[in-house]
Length: 251
Image (tube, rainbow, N blue to C red; front, top):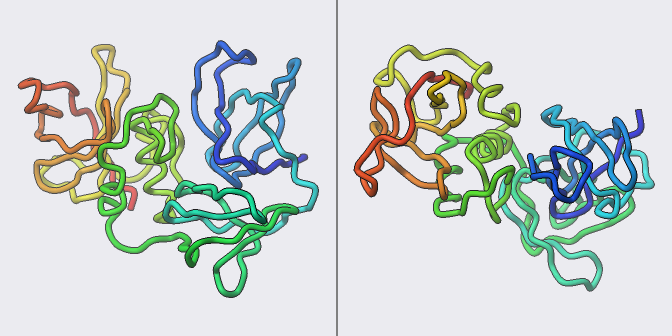
């Protein structure tokens, strides 16, 4: 199996081998993947972190020439780094770093060495994940997004738990298979995952219990809303927008 590592800030994963296909997810900086198939200038890949499959444009890839046989360190917070004298990059939380220097001010991914503007903080973070989730409040919704530039509901949950040392699948309906079921909302704790279904009974949305009666989730943007046994109530809309289906504890 030939592995590649993402050297860009992120690479979009699309649902088909065409620039017209919609984005399904993103590869964060340093995440490894294998090529499953090719079609023209596109490659079908499998992301090692969450087993997600999607198509990428080969023009967006910088191959790694060095063998990497060590497990990466997970970046726990957005960080500015520099490659030589180039302008800084802001690496999103969840990026994967290799060969971190002893002073924790730099790292090497493949053959490229980067220096950080501040000591690198890596996972797992301690404390409750809701504190980490609150960093993303007001970030806009982006279908398939996993970064500070935009997220979707399952991308928020996956990223937050990744930096806390817990690996979750990419999509909400698969995330719902993880962890232990909590039967009642009043038995749930901050950080528990709350899943919501549509009229057909399919899980289509996920958020995290923020505090008693409050959920943090991404819907339009990362936001706080009221949660009760029925679902999510939006005060600004004066109505319920999501129907509660399932509660899971994964932390």
